[in-house]
Structures are given as C-alpha cells and as structure tokens.
Image (tube, rainbow over all chains, first blue to last red; front, top):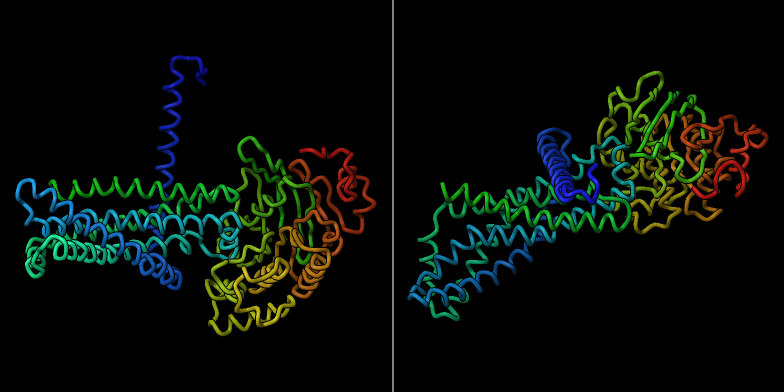
Length: 264
Length: 248
C-alpha cells in the first residue's frame, strides 16, 4: 500500500479508480452476455414479455412522440434561419428528415426512454431485491435473470425501433407543420423533398440504433436493479446510476454506430 | 434429513458462520434462535443456495446440496420470508400458485387457482382475498399469504424466517398456531429462525442457538429452560447482563 504522502499516491488512487471501473464494466458485460444467452433457452415468460412490451413500448409513445414533434419543429426553424445565411432555405425538408431519422429520432427517443424506462426497471427490480422478492423467486425455482431481465431486455430491443419509426414520422411531421405554417413552404413540395431525399439506409440505420439503445436501456436498468444495495437509499442510487449510465452509453454507442455506418 | 457440517461463511472481514454443525431430522420442527446479526438468516440462505458457503458441506438426505440438480432440489422446499416477499405485480392467488403455474409442477391455470384458494382458506383467508394485490393487505394477511405460498406445492421441507416479526401478539399467536398445525398435518420438516420466544415454544420440537458463528447449544424444547448453558439462559430470559455482550 502506498502511503498518502508518497508522490505516487495520486497515481495509485487513479489506478484504483480505473481498476474499479474496469471491474464494473466486466460485470456489466458478463451480465449482458448472460441475458443474451438466456433469450433463446426455455422457459419463456410470455406474460412478462407482453407486459414489458406495453410498459416499455406502448406507454413510451406519448413522451417519444412529443419530444419528436417539438424537435422536428425547432429543427426546421434552425435550419431555415441558418440556411438563410447562404441562401439555402430550400434544404429544410431534406435536412429535417435526415437529421430526424439518422440522429435525433433514435438518440432523443433513446434518452427519453432511458429516463422513463431504465429508472422504472431499476427501481422495480431494486425494490424486489431489497424486499427479498428476488430470493423468493429463486426458492420458487425461477431464475431471476430469465424471469425479470430477459423479457424486459427483449421487449426494449424490439420496441425501440418501432418507437424510433414513430418518432421519426412525428418529427418530420413537426418540421412539415412549421415549414408550411411558419416558413411558407408549399405542403406537397415539402413532402416530395423529404421523400425524394431519404434513402433506405438512412431509416434503417436509425432503426438499428434504436434496437441497440433499447438493449442498453433495459440491460442497465436490470443490472443496476439487481445489484441494488439495501434500503431506500440503495434503490435510489441504483435508479440514478441506471439512468446516467444508460444515457452516457447511448451517446457513446451512437457515436460508434455512426462511425461504423457512415464513414466507411 | 438436513445435515450441516462445519459450514463457514464470511462477508469480507466479517466471519458470520465459523463452523456450524447441525442435524435436522425428517419430520422435525427445528427452531434456530440467536441475537440479531448472528447469521441465522445467512445459515438458512446457505442451505437454499441463495448464499454460497466458503467451506463445509450441506447434505440433504445424504446428497451434497452443492451438487444437487437445482430445480429438483428447490422443489422440495417452501419458504416463508420475513417480510412476506410477495410479488407486488401479481394478485394474491397468482402469488400463492406461482410455483404451480410454472416449472416442474405446472398445472392448468384453473386448477392452480383452485389450489391457491384452498391454501388461502387453510391459512384463514377468504376466497375474496385471492383477487387482491399484496399492497391491499395488512401485514398479518401478507404473512398468511406468504405461508399459503410456502405450502402451495406441498413441499417436504419448509423454512420460516422470522414468521412473527412486526405482528401484534394475537396475530403472532395465530401465525405460530398455523405453522404448528400445518407442519404436523403435512408431516414436513420445518426450520424456523426467530428471536420471539413465544414462537419458539409454540413451534419447536428442537431448538438450536447460534452464537458467534457456531451452534452454542442444541436440544429438545423440553430441555431448553433447564439447560445449564449461560448463553442460552441469558438469551431466553432476555437478560442484559451475561456472557453475550448487549452491544454488538
């Protein structure tokens, strides 16, 4: 052990932090791998999967839709005012469309779902942990990972692309509403520009990102919930950690996926 | 029969179990007593495999619990948790029938519901309770539902973790009586953890006292009051002075 007064103390402290972070990352990766490994192996909890689909997918629609609507409208205004500097106001429909489907739809949708779903999953599973409900599952011959994590992760991974698709459409509609009503665009022309400009992969890449973000959100919610410490404070910390970690990982994954999809 | 041979468990520097040796014969009701934080719940969780012992052996009918097929092993057990541990998102009958709806002993839904209602009746709850959620029940009713869940699949061995904690004396008496009746009726092996002496006297055939990570004393309930062990006598009479430090 290096004494606190040693000149190497800060390096040792940094080393401890890095090692702890790597250990946490390792545990998270093992957890995620274990969840994926259980997805294809019976028993399958269809009722829990259905409930998770409703909770994560259906009930997230309002928040994702509203976020996309206002983002699409604001994006149209920004592009119009920025484009006016070099007489490029006409690009509003195409840039709104590409911005929504490639980036803002999946990323903002992912972040909103992270706030709504990762927190609720972590709080629910964390409470189950501290009230011994997870131990009770084990004594009732039920694998907690299979019963709690697999349905939620699978539901989030499948529901997020649908949410992103809906968010993309509403975001583009928000841009169209502002473009036509505030910026004087012709309605049919705006829509034609949007449709002509978008390519299949623009949409596909966003949907793929959505699936990845859904996986991240649910996995981190489950991971932090299952590793929640005792008491209300422990559940609170798990909830906060799940949202923060999911949000940061979504942004990091978005950068990596964008590199892979659009720079090669 | 459950045998524990030199079972050790530590959490970091805290050595909770330091060589527990204990035998619980089939059909017997064993009650483990001991102060708070002496490792009673850890011992129980070690047997169930919820916590893995660092050393020692746990045998169930001569078979090493660590090597037993997990589902078949757990199917032999029922457990009443201290706080009930009922699943909030499921109705009462679904909690009781949880094991009957899944896994090795899965039954059709209607049959599982009928069994759940029958078990609820057995613990003194009306059929109307079946469709409520756990949050709608009082603490005593939740304990009864937990008890109904523990016996629903008619296990050979039932564990009770602090069955009367948080209940008023009358409700505690009711739960104690129910446990005793059910264990006798089912012929099950029972292991109860408690520091409620009225539970000990109502439930136990044999008593074991856990102190400092080892079994300090074990014997039939009839011998508990006259046993010369100073630790046991201090504990059962609730004396502040004696070999057990009051502040731990």
